[in-house]
Length: 422
Image 1 (cartoon, rainbow, N blue to C red):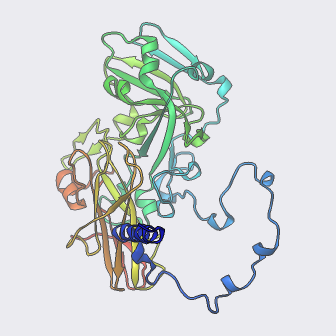
Image 2 (image 1 turned 90 degrees about the vertical axis):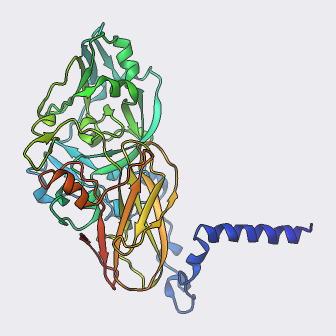
């Protein structure tokens, strides 16, 4: 076989693969002729002037043209900036990793600024030997790297009674997905030695709010971590520097930041965050408690109210994220007509348990209005429900664990808004 023939065959194979992936067809209508476009035909300032040296920016920062990509809050949602929520700009991100600087944060007593040289982790209670660790003591343990999502149980909570917040940053932005570096918690507990009646742990934060949560010992010994880095760098102060607990797949309130103490006991403590807060109030006035796991959920991030379609009719890409606290997401369905017809989305990027998964769906938009939805399927067989199904099961009183299907209405101009369909 000649080299030319091999090259032609190879090229055909590449193009065939690209078409199968939906990539080659994007060329149609996605480029334009160069004639008359000064942006490409004329010299720009940056073509002619030397830029700053790297030493001028010793810690890298985003481009000035990306300054709008930041966490945002909703003024009326929390009582005080000291006890507040800042939402991840999901519509500005791609892939599955959330940059450290825009990770969702929720704090109850402001951001604690802790000197790591003075920080200690105590293990006490039903253990053979009560211990106190310095940061340097902890650095001697074997460590793991794991990618997990952290989602607040109240994420999408304002949507229980109907469409309210206009933007996926605000409806779904109480979440981030990062790589944690840390020590499996079981190693630390094994060092202290668990007594035979040890059934629960109570992690406690070092900040002024004194956050605590009861966690079953089975979970603590399974996949919990004591983390000191995220995405390769030290935790940010708002993310618990220098030490935080990681509780994969479970609600974010349990991921105690600024971790200073872990008490081991034989029953749950029933502190504030698991009695008056973070319980699910049902229609009959009773409350579900210990609803730790985060159910499968997804959201289309583009197009969405903060990310309208900026081009006319033609080839259009839908993208979003999906996640489950019980495993991975092998499949996401997308509809552009409010659920009349569903299409399999294209899953892209790595697939980890209890992590975000990125999906795409490409289609030819004819310029007519759209009703966009996504529906996640997790590895246990669970299928993301509609909001009406959730309300039938749990009523309208809850604000926690709302994983109902989200709908965006997109008009002829490409502008999107938060709506519901029956």
